[in-house]
Structures are given as structure tokens and as C-alpha cells.
Image 1: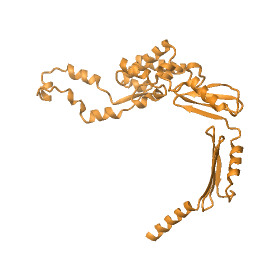
Image 2: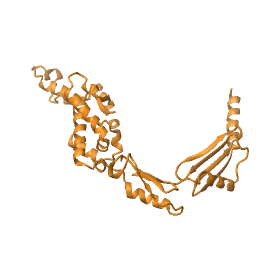
Image 3: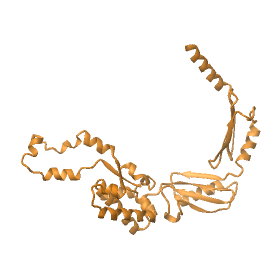
Image 4: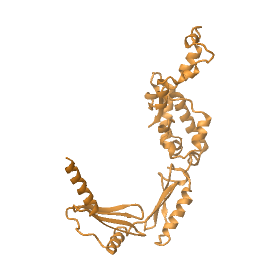
Amino acid sequence: MKKSLILVAIMIAAATLFAETVTCESKMGKCTYEITSNGNYSEDCICRNGEGRGEGGNYGMPTTLPTEDECLANLEKKCKDAGFKCENEAGECYIEQNGEYGCSCKGVWSANGAVEGGYHGIAEFNEETSEEENCNRLVEICGTEPATVRDVCEDQEILNQCISYIKTFADGCFELLTDEDVEEILDSPAYHYDYAHSQGLPGSIPKCCQMSELRTEYQTRLECLENCKDDNCCETCHVKLIPHDDDITSSEDGSDKEEVPTDGAAPEEDTADGDSAAPAEKEESKSDGCSVMLI
């Protein structure tokens, strides 16, 4: 058994040892060619716009690697029509050789002139200057920092409407959303709150601000909640609930026991006088162990 394992290890090491590679790089991108000892051939080229082009296998593939000059010629051929890509913390831009460009900013769908998440136009393409122009355009359109919720909620009336939706859903199906919570959301990156439910927060204010169809859907759910008479209104009205691990852990490990008075009174004595108001209030305000996800 040990001899077999040693033999396998030697074979793997030999395959690695005798693998041949050729790599070349230019302003058009980068190519890497490889042939392993078992005859597998691979070609991996990444053009300057981030697009990958290549092929590989062992049937009908070349049995020798290209020279560095041939590698550069192949790179030029494969990426000759590739434009430029520029990206920063706020977004990314692409510019094609025909002058068409497209930029997208994180968290932005229709704000500040974006159409369906993008800014499009025509720019003069110059092989020597277009990459720099493209990066300048990205800064002009998206800046250098991700857009906040305030940035994408341009209409104050619509913003107030969206906040009202989210607060109603939170207060009715999760837990109170305070003014401080809302301010924190408004000053945070908009793309982060596209996934608000994964952070234990209800809904998405930036999407609500930018998409009229989502506001229509939220209005329908709000009216459903207001008129709902059953015991599962949050589910009935499609304000979907998912488990919230922190709340489940809290209820299971008895972490709410700190609410018991610390003056030495035993827990049994707290309810001995028949006063049920405090326990009732506690029951009503206790989290149900769910957070809100709006689909």
C-alpha cells in the first residue's frame, strides 16, 4: 500500500515537474500556454477588458508550445477587438473599440440618469488615450466611493414613502425600526441594503426609491396587512419571515432573564401578586425570532 502511494506521489510530482509553460503579456492582456507530461494542452488568455478567451484538452491539440513571439501574436489576434475596463470602489466602466461605453455604479439602478442600472454613450476611441479617458469617465459618473441610500433616493417624497413602507413592515412583522436605524441605513452604501434581509433588516429602501414597480408591490402588501384578519398576516401578505439566529439563541439560552429584579426576589414572587400587566407587555414586545425578507 505504501509503495502504491509513493508511486502515485512520484507520478504527480513528475507531471508537475515536466509540465511546460509559456507566458506572454502586453497592453492587450495576458496569455498562458501549458502542456503537461500526460499531453494535456491548455491556452488561457485574459484580454485587457477582463474577458477570458482560450481552449484546452488533449485530442487534436498542439503538441508543442508557441514561442514567446507566437504567444504575443496569438494574444494580439484573440484580443484585437477588446476594449478597456476600468473599476474602482464605486463601480466599473467598459469602452469598446467602436467608442460605445457602459458604466454601472454599485447600488444604482435608475438614479442620477442611470437607465436600468447603466450609463451608456459614445466616446471617441483612441488606442493610446481611451483607457485613461474611460477611468476619468468612471470617476465623473460614479465617483470614488459607493453611492449611499441618500444618493439614490433623489426624490424626498418618494424616500419618505419608502421609509414608511419599510417601517410598517418592520414594526408589524419583526421589531421596531427606530429613527436612528433609518438614519444609519440612509448613510450606508445603497448596494449593501439591496440585501437588507440578510442583515436582519426589513426590505430595501434604495430599490424602493428607484423602482416604481416595487413601490406598487409594497403598497399592495401594506394594504393587505392593514386589512388582514388571520393569525399569519406577514406570510399571507408576502412579507416573508426567515429565522434570525441571534433571536433564536437568545430565547433558547434564557438571555432575557436579566429583566428579573435584582433585589433578591425569586422569580415566583414576581407573579404571586397576580399582576399580569408586565408579563403581557413583555410577551407583546418580544421578538418572534424572525427577520423580514421582501421578495
